[in-house]
Length: 138
Image (cartoon, rainbow, N blue to C red; front, side, top):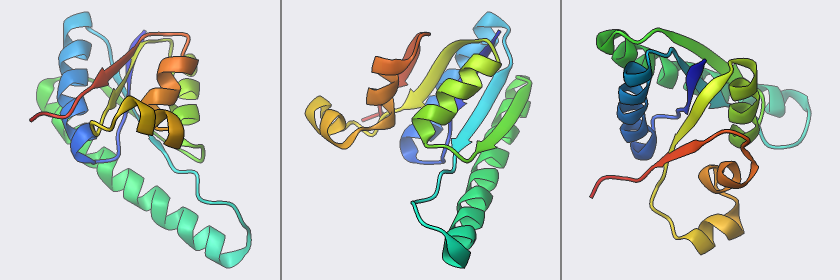
């Protein structure tokens, strides 16, 4: 089993990393760090350039999370997937036999999340395993 964390270095994700490390440590599970890097639609060179930049940003963010996990003694796996964040997390959770999916929340209202389709909102409705949605600190 494992704990899967959606990570993009946003303030909510940074706080969620701390909680995910606590959960992974408590259960003795490895942490799977996931960055969904699906670029906007389109084709051609602009598409490829954007995709490459998004993937590189994801790799950099995940390197910082790996360093925090190493410091906490939690083994990690890193995945940068060319999928939207919610689908990337669901796929990674399935492949890694995840116990939980952990995501940070920006503190937006439930109505706004439902209308705009936030990743936490989607996961709460689509995930077959528990989703731990970590609120922003005040």
